[in-house]
Image (cartoon, one colour):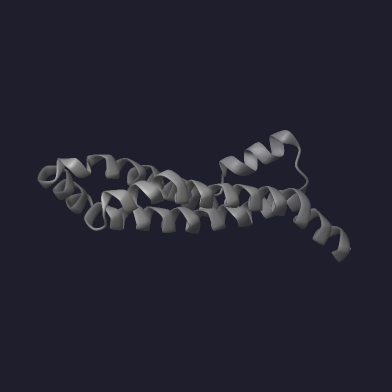
Length: 125
């Protein structure tokens, strides 16, 4: 993977701006993957600090796994744009589509953690 990125930079410096969103998305994948599989999770510590109930903490863990897959998809698309695709298509995806996907994911996370999960927990009692 690093060799392919190096080849893009060495042989096509015009594509350097395309590398930034790929690296950021890949970093997010690594962060969320570590979060969903680690024992001392950053998101769980924040949830406990702000006093989220247990059911919302469990919902937060599920959404962390979903965010891992979302960022993986996003970094895959950006990775494909490193080697193929027009600059215009990359600009549309990087400037609008990926941000739209992330906004929808943020809204879904808030809806699930704060509204849906507590209600399903109350109805299960």
